[in-house]
Image (cartoon, rainbow, N blue to C red; front, side, top):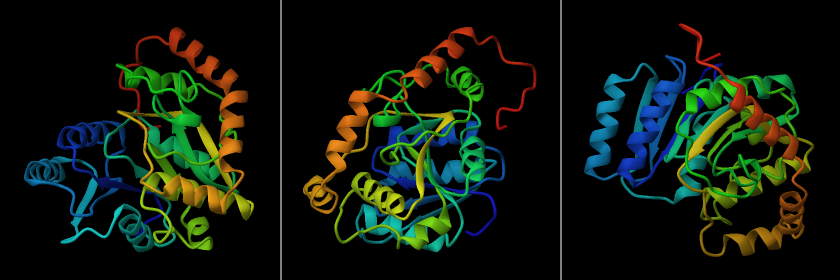
Length: 278
């Protein structure tokens, strides 16, 4: 699974309906030929497997599906997948996410714009610090993701700092991830907590965790920690919760949220035959 372009990894979950919607949106919003790895930690049931089999056979993306016979846990499994990707940049997409057109190309452009960027996270209706239209709140997935994608494309690519990357979708620089040793499966059970820990370790070595202000990925709900994860985070990173709380209260991205809303209100009909993956 090596290549110069980012690899999209979808950790397969047990929600058949959400997975079906995610794969349909991924197909529509991503350039043909993009490498996609559906990684199943023994979670998919018969219906989900049928959905995956049908989608892999029909998609224009270069898709692969792997399934473990026995589950090793969310973080350990994802770490295995990331290690197998080597130095390739990897976009981890939640299995209940709905990417908007051009999402991956814009995340890639963000990563390429600054060699110090280790993670790029798009806006989301359920994106915590990267949430839109209101910080820290969960809204429904917008009805017209294509229109929202065109509005986001008009945003200035400022790439402001986030406290940490967020699990709805994140593009991770492979070389940076390897430098800090990957995910800590011994301390955390959830991808939610492991991604925060990874982000903080990256930041500690001078890497940046940023918002890709030109991309949007919808999600049905926020990620959640497993039991004990937040205690483990607090023990290792005592300033994490105060930093996050301060970010949510200060909302340094307020002006950007407003700008995206204004652009959305002013956006017109799509141009004929416009390339949505730009």
